[in-house]
Amino acid sequence: MQTIKQEAIDAIAKMPEQADMEEIMYRLYVIDKIRKGRQAADRGDVTSIDDLKKEIEKW
Image (cartoon, rainbow, N blue to C red; front, top):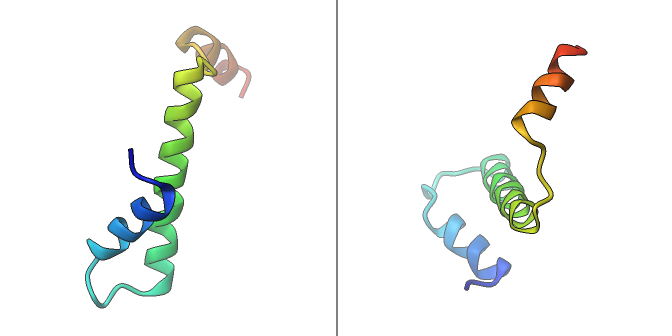
């Protein structure tokens, strides 16, 4: 398993040379959110479809 630092370095390395700081920051943000989502799912810390539908109905 890669370290977070290595994952960030690999993601940046795959980006075009002309990528600006905003694009780099956004890419790292998305990677972080995906990683945290996977960790939550592994822990079982998720919302069921039924609960989500009930919550949406309240909107």
